[in-house]
Image 1 (tube, rainbow, N blue to C red):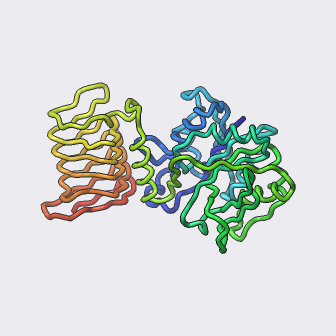
Image 2: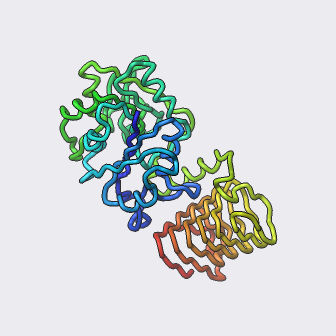
Length: 353
């Protein structure tokens, strides 16, 4: 089985952060979203991974490389225009050929491992198996109507209630999906919808099964979604070694060690992730904070935030919360109490308060 990760989107809901880099490379717990997904695919035992890329392909290729660090083979497949998920699958057909494949969106994170849906695809002798998640706002998703262990019908963003099981962007297909895509037409959005292609499979008598998610799932398409995903990932960390100092819980006069983190007269409240080269002085950090490489924090209280590499925060009164701060940003506070400030700032921004 091969894998197909879709990473061609531009991330307009995450501006200004995505003016300067790909949304799939934004960090969750100090690791790019796309890397979280690749590692989950690798844990499922897949060795051949195709990544659909668009205008941000250079950034993605530079970050991910050829897959050698995970001992897998990664190929990049360029989608000329963002014309829908089914169009992306069609574009990838020369790479997939006759292989079964797992497809996952490059900006989605979920707690469960992927082998479950792959195993059920085979044990149920399906042509397709889709992962579903119960949602409170079904009119915003593709929704599945089920019958036993099979999907009976799929509707993209239904206007009338037909259930609350949303298609979240994890699928397993065999080669039958390709002729189904050839038989559909663009939706009102001008895109080839994967839900339409799966519905066509059903109409042609194909077996489409499903699995329900276990644990959480998060689409990281907005700043608040990013922060929620960061909280969820940090809360679930059990092996702290790759998250640098996320096991620190006490103040210290300095923090020597392999990660070269300076912690002076400060308190760390777990869960957090701190990258190497960070300097924290007279501050309280956490819970639910990710601090990127070479960040400097002085006289601040920060919680529930993502701070990217090279940023400097100084003398900010009140508690900084619900913030998504890009690379090489400078924020200098004042003596005035600002309450609980919140920032969404792109790379190289500067604020004097």
